[in-house]
Amino acid sequence: MKTALIMIKRNIKLFFKDKGMFFTSLITPAILLVLYATFLGNVYRDSFLMNLPAGLEISDKLIDGLVGGQLISSILAVSCVTVAFCSNFLMVQDKATGAIKDLRISPTRSSIFSLSYYVASLVCTLTICIVSAVICFVYIAFTGWYMSALDVVCIILDVILLVLFGTALSSIINFFLSSQGQISAVGTIVSSGYGFICGAYMPISSFGEGLQTVISFLPGTYGTALLRNHTLRGACDELGKSGVPTEALEALKDAIDCNVYFFGNKVETTVMYAILGVTVAILIGVYIFINSLSKKTK
Image (cartoon, rainbow, N blue to C red; front, side):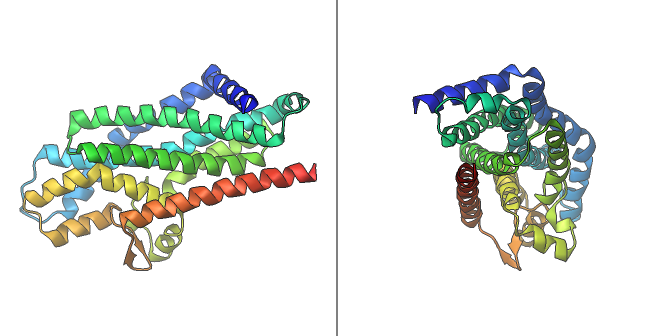
């Protein structure tokens, strides 16, 4: 255990010491917030207004709260996974530079190295994503705050669960990488593609029926939906108090992916948590398995 703690500290220190990797991971959510607010804010606003009953007067602050909630849920849903890939690239860098060969000279079990990479990546990713969540809360406080203390706690829980998911997924994929070029390629693919397949960039309801069915099988979809529910629950309740009919409110939730359906059946929040939790357990199991299999092969 002492050796594992030393390796974990070593990996965390190297991550934060690498200014390029660290600042890229930290600045990315802030940049996304600026870009989303600048380019997607009006799109989200128009989407909300289109789905509200005609003639109903809704305050600008409430609309800003709805837009802000959708923006920060998208940012956190993407960041928890993309940052995990960035922080986990140290495992690949050690292979590319040959540092892992030097480390394996010591009589340390391979499982210790695997554990240290996973835990260090988890700690680094969680640190950055919690900071990102705080930045998002500050943004919402200035635009339109309708979240309760319970919502904030649930959002932090969602972030932790998504970080566990992102770290486990990146650990498995990065296990098979061994060069800087592969790091760049995977980083580009994940950064540009994950937001679409998890419903963060565009609501799943805007896709075709076939694509919606495919996306409903992806665990990241439910992570985004959880964040949507908790960032928008207060604002949606306020809409109900403002006179928006229940049917119109449910249609709005369908349009912004607060409600997610699996073959026509609405997926409840508890089921979303169960799907993510089971997925994390399976991915960690796969990571342990491929590491043990690699050890036997060697």
